[in-house]
Length: 225
Length: 126
Image 1 (tube, rainbow over the protein chains, first blue to last red):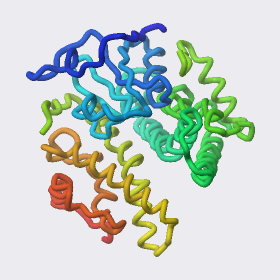
Image 2: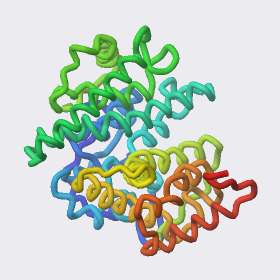
Image 3: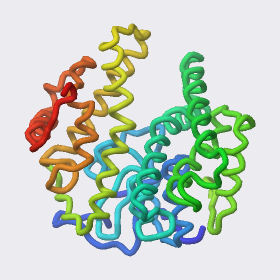
């Protein structure tokens, strides 16, 4: 994959990222990653568009017991993705990471109002879409024993999120302004695999058409790439 | 204490992006748990026991992460009070109304006091 370097290096913390004296510079940004995570995919997708090299360190999404040891002092929430900049500074939270990487590019609006709207869509993503669609998908993919009531709750809340997204996309090509940007990348990540969580996008024609537009952007990569 | 201090952010854009990180955390870990638990209590709703327990556990997990994030620090981003602090303060300072005890989180409690001491501060009830 262009720009991405998967590494078989042991995931020993601090070997390249930091020393006791503080951060050291790296040739590439490094990301604590999960291949299956839509949140991590957002960063991989934007890096593919921008041609930014990214070294990936895989963390287990089911057995999270090693997270305090590996990323405890990099991300208080112990989540992936956690990006390590070339100078060693850590940056957690997928939407904050893509906003950081998009700074100064066409993927982040410069207009104050549009920028705030992009941020608003990414907040919506973390509140309405991710906790429902991603969690339903996780339960399905890893055969987690969630109760029928829990499944039904995620389906109802996820549909509410998708209905809001459909309203937001109705009559529009992109979420913010007239170009593809960080808000689209953020919402695409879990919406395009919603079917893996048991969601049917048939009822959301504007969402479907927008998914097609995102996938046809130059430099697009798949979540499985 | 953290091994590394966050570096001074060189630009307004840098401050802006670093401010968004705690704001996303707030909407994912804090708001859905602390705010919803508080809503149940304020409006005297009786959620199923499983749901109430899940909100308590997830809320505590969020508060523990916030405590880690504030340990050794005065404010969430850089050395000044910003939108990130305002965002996290919103529900954290009324966590007790959702049944959360902040006693185990000394860094959070000290930070709440610092926020409340900012000039022009108003209360949620003002």
